[in-house]
Image 1 (cartoon, rainbow, N blue to C red):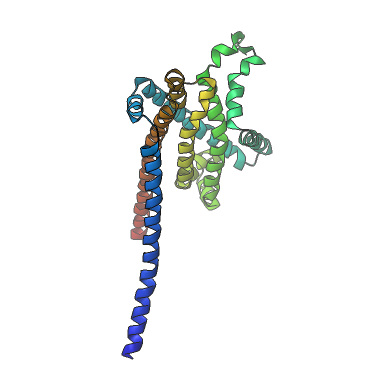
Image 2 (cartoon, rainbow, N blue to C red):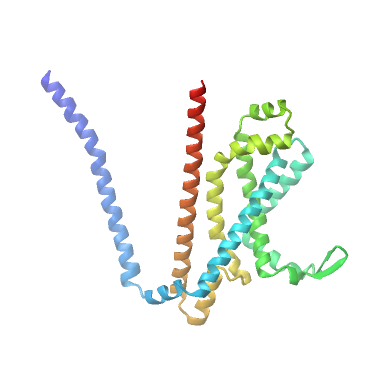
Length: 287
């Protein structure tokens, strides 16, 4: 009996130690690969790290960071507003509204963002003037590189944000809407006051990832002369010929901004999760 118990104990120890040894070997191999990559990139490469450090703190690059954040925030807020409207149209019973929203999503999701940005920048080629309230305005005075970048980013991201918000809205039980309507709320108020607050917890993780992707996607607008991070560093590279160094500067700044954004997203998700726990505990106390 003792031998059987001892054999079972040894078997359990062997089963536990096997995965640990395998994980340790994988970790060592991974560290070796990372060490070799770092040595090749930093040690054997010809990168001037003093130049990287100098331009990382350059006022011109700081200005580019500010423009990147501005493009991201305006496009994100605008896409949330427009995406919410489109999502409401998609889940409405009106076939005309649903057709308009689905057509918008089909077009802006189906064409590359870079093509859209370049299109808005060159809008004046086929639409030289825009008539506003009886006044004729030159298109090029309105569609600057900055406004073209905002239009391209906002309209494109809104199509994706619409699907994110729509997925969150349909995740809320239909009984919530029926209950809201039964106490006298209008469909719009039921959507804004009852359904949308509950859907935010489902929407937030995907919307946060979309926002981070938007932050990096702003680098595309440098092709139309916008001086965000990528445009600023490429302008510096054209003048100084430090191409790799300025690309490293741009990469480091994007890493910093994405890291901060990811931290804020995780904090917000944790906050909402704590509020869910508090609500559940209160319900249990009442019950």
